Image (cartoon, rainbow over all chains, first blue to last red; front, side, top):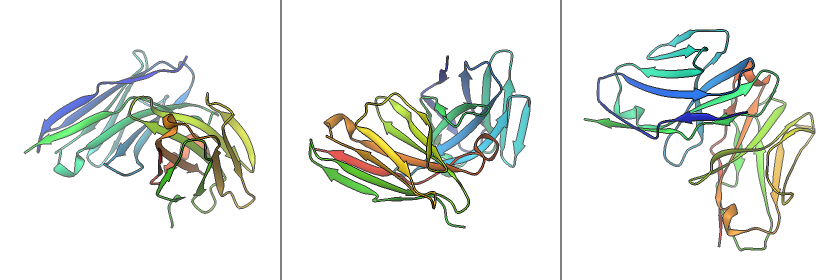
Length: 111
Length: 113
């Protein structure tokens, strides 16, 4: 079955690293995504990883994938006030066009 | 290049009416998907179109329908609106699905009164 879970809230001090976690249940080959949503806006694709990878780094963003535990994390280095948003984890099985989203994690930056 | 364009941005309708939302994908993208976002249910998949054919459908009642035109633009229609249909409706387009990622529009905020 498909289920993607995230914690609802995360507060981080400005300049620290933020780590947002996600677990998924689909056992087939899959793409895993991180999206960012700011108030009143649509979803912005931050990064994605295929399930045969362990890690992907893109500037301040690092994605780690633990396939055994079906655990995905997004690390944001040097968190800034502009990183305040809701972050969604999503998956789609290879060959399927349907995205299954987590509940979203609201990231709050403490000055 | 232009992103995914959704129109209108905001809409207020009365219960029982019907509504049509429009989505223009990124040029060259042939896959268009629709999602409903509500505070209670989160982001839920409605349907996906590719080359004018519906390939995938979510668990929504038949009041929700869509179509895609030969230029890849898509519309979704909701008939006999209910208060619970109030939501942000998001459209996403992709070139080749998973590997390229999905680009979302800013959404249409529908309020049913």
